[in-house]
Length: 308
Image (cartoon, rainbow, N blue to C red; front, top):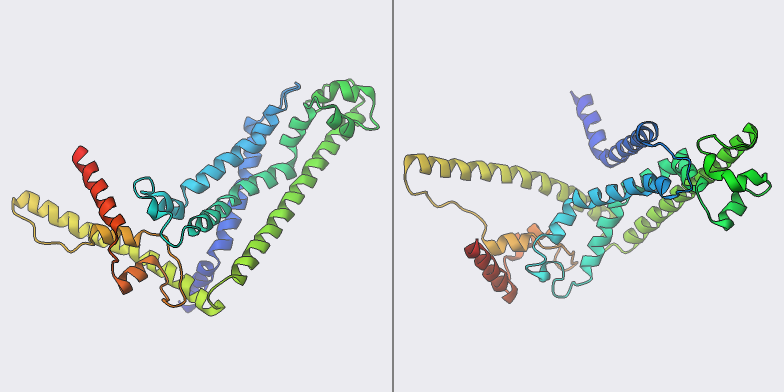
């Protein structure tokens, strides 16, 4: 039993690495599936087809990354009604910091797709073989026969009038260029990730031990908050259904006020003088600070409810 708990604890501690590894395997599998099933490079001078298969999935993954990011949903929920939620007084730049974090985390999947697709070389080969640029043709067909200039777009489908060895050499050359770009992208992304991580740790307002405690607390608070949501939702729905079927007035049910929900949903900024590890922690410790924006938001909400 202790051994099982140790293994479980190890996997929980390494869940980020496991998650990225699973994402990498899923990306490789998806790229191979696209290449074998959906991708059919035409023998034409159209560059767009190969570029679409190279960049369109990356764009879709970026959008999904934003859409599935809980921090992004928290950041933008209600911001049109009350812009103070994303630009709080005295912390206007914190919005761009959080947006940068969301963007970097959402870029992981698109970067994986581009890296795998470039290392495979199929999409790049199709795109570059259809180029009409004299400069690119000069780089690709340097030292090659004249047919390379005239029939480069036929290389990917093997219908050129060149010798089979020249055709194969051109294909390998395009794939080599694609793989070089893929490794450059991987190295650049790795270095940038290391740079941003070191910079964020260098600018950290807390020590390494306190940062570890902060991460643990945030994870536990999130888990317990979800359990508490479920518990209170069950109690409230049970009370309402019981009162409905028994035709009686409900008893008072303790719930946070509208202002409390608003305050607990704000972006969190750490202050050394007040060591609050989350927005909820700050609300519980300091209570609600009444401001004109609360009245404005409440009035807008009530007006919207009446119009509905």
